Image 1 (cartoon, rainbow, N blue to C red):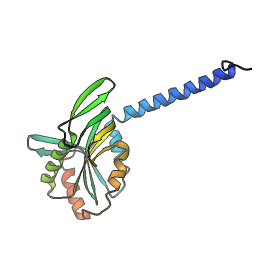
Image 2 (cartoon, rainbow, N blue to C red; image 1 turned 120 degrees about the vertical axis):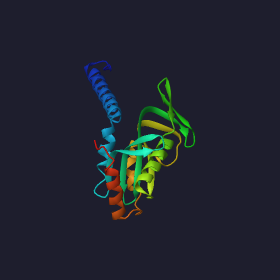
Image 3 (cartoon, rainbow, N blue to C red; image 1 turned 120 degrees about the horizontal axis):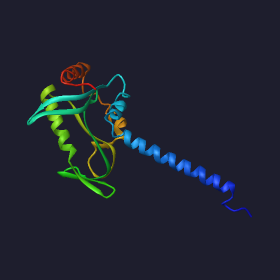
Image 4 (cartoon, one colour; image 1 turned 60 degrees about the vertical axis):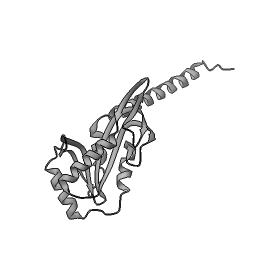
Length: 189
């Protein structure tokens, strides 16, 4: 009777080890890439001609200036994105002041990004006037473990979330007007 530890057994074991190692490094690479803000921009650029993607829109706020990472102007509305790159599990609720981030044994506090996003929406509305604003908080690397509401999503949900807003809320003229105002304050990367 052949033993598992024969030459064929070692080949199978070696092949299995190579596959597991490759999967581990692929996952780590994807995890590291999700930390890069360009990943979000690359996703948004896949939206198509009906969407105007603006980066680093600087607007005046109550206590200084706000730098809004991404704004997407579309027929369905103006998407205001707050991007979070924390890794680990995020715990909390929509109305909590602070959310917890657990990564291994490390625990950190994250101030509710929905509130930050709301400040961005308010500042943009002062600049552009009334429009159909859609707040979005995007976590690029974390797993969400709470009741955050419909506007807190993971990176893989970003494009489907934006594309599901099909009801026209802004005329082409209004889209152009808003894009022009925001482009004048944007520091495109």
